[in-house]
Image (cartoon, rainbow, N blue to C red; front, side, top):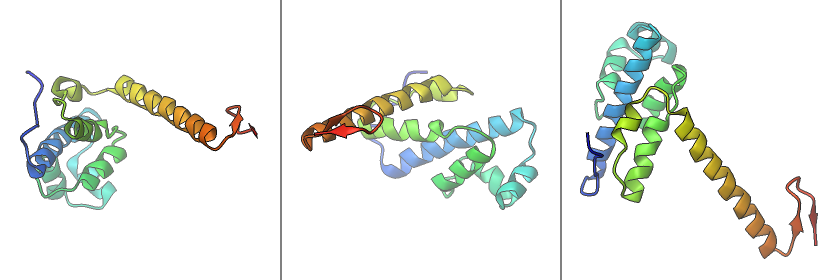
Length: 141
């Protein structure tokens, strides 16, 4: 399956796609762990019907609903936030990657990039304010 371009999609279409992908991932994880819809519903304070609809990717569910279910199941929310980043940056959705059950290595790489950029931002801030120091927070003028 070629990467999906979302360049001409409106917000509703993008969020519908993300909710559809997320609902499938939540259902896959719930089934893999042999958790019933009733148990998931009770755990998050919702109805079984609500869980069925969320897993079906209904557009009326919220991103918060998907995050709540994913967290309860111990599922990363990368399947929600990676598509958002792709759309924001105009790059195709990595559908095959998002279909994998475990994309921990992708998340780890993203977080390492964030850590590197944070360290650079701190360094730039210290240089701009005329302070230099080590990474332990000891600053000297």
